[in-house]
Length: 528
Image 1: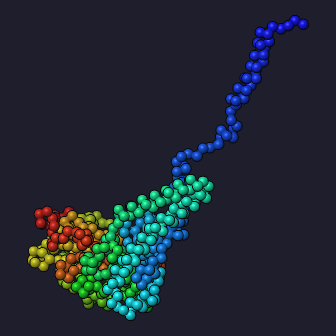
Image 2: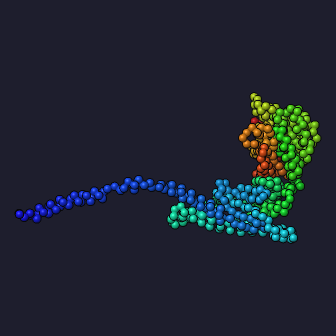
Image 3: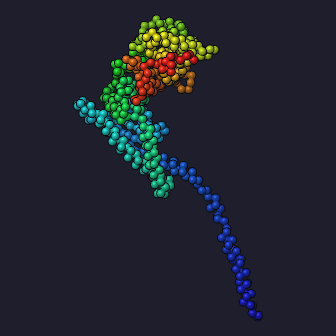
């Protein structure tokens, strides 16, 4: 057999290697299994949202479980806690009496203070040694300071622990869990910074009461002291707790409101609409608040017929003078009947009367629409009536007998007296409003003290019963504060009282002018 040259054998060997190389190369280029290529990768923003949800939920659970601090505050045992909230603020729960709400700050956390019980030993010590009451406020202030410091530390631990634990359960990775805890601490710090930046120490000037506490406005003092003494949040929170102690000590009944003897108290009612329950409510408020005079801005009746006149008889026994103006549901028949009742003062055509130290003037509604119809020119007639009232107010001021409070039924008439009187009262719209008009006159619109009467059952929800207590300084005869009182409508038993101050009575405000004619030229504005 002939020998094959070595060059040929080398070439054949290389040819045989090519398929193997191609096979290996093609094998390396095969795509990964389909299951690996189709596996979804989570988007970054979804992972971020998930992390935030874990942080918020874990922090909230941590606050619920270990975020409470038990603090003895004076003779009271209290529990302080931070709770998630959309509006912030402070809530003081006084079980079983009710709660006080303060708009103390705006942040995603709310400060809850639960007054758990009265400590018998510490309370008895105050009874045995009354001289200790003088230092009770300082003691309460120190207790609150220590309690809030402990609460801050406890809350930090609670949110970090809760978020870290939940992160570990969800992610099963220590690094992600620690990241959740760190983010929770950062969120709590940011919330605390926001609360500090928006802290409003004057929020105790306008608290809201609910439950049985709504019948104890003495918790925030009288109309004079709320202006002169309520200037530091911490001190006044101490005052609240101190007075709650006295409230508990009464046990059998809530303390009645003890107003400043120099303060004139006016009960403003409106739109009773034949609701017989209104008379009992009014009589109770007259007694509790020691009301000097009642002002009714109209629509006491529903149809103004003579058959309805007997409904008005309880007015004589309410315990205070009754000032009244005609509404669009009150007829001239109604007005004449009221003029014959004792202790009733009917205002019309701008006539002025001095009652309980205040000078009132008013005008009846020019419209009589018991069927609730809208007549042509109704708005114009209201403006003309308001203009006539404004004219008589200017005449009174020129004669040296200025009017302190004007009264009309519809706000459109009341707006015409802007610049001629410090305060004008109205009703008609069945909900409360308050504003200072262009030339300095304050307009106070009362809600329905009858809960809209029988028409309350027409809607899905009953209308509340609304009224107000107005506090006037006896020397200046100016409005110093008012309590807005709202009771649940038909079938409801809720109650809420909120205190308000005119802007000029807020701490640090510039003194208000002595006269209401604060227009640029010193004269009243022309009728609109």
